[in-house]
Length: 74
Image (cartoon, rainbow, N blue to C red; front, side):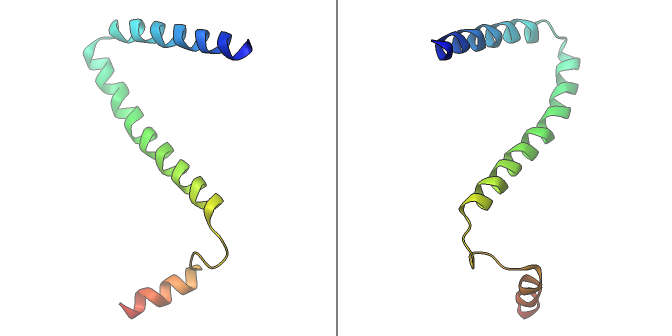
């Protein structure tokens, strides 16, 4: 029951946010996008890093020194 109530509340908030965004002037929206876009990509990269950390097993990655040695061979 709580999950259903939460979903309804989230859906209502999404609808309300959509209405609020429509009232924001275009110039302000562009500024907001300029701020949010890099944050979105940072969050995307952060999630990928967390997922990789959870899935890595010993020996799956190189230490810093091993990586530097490998790069010198190229």
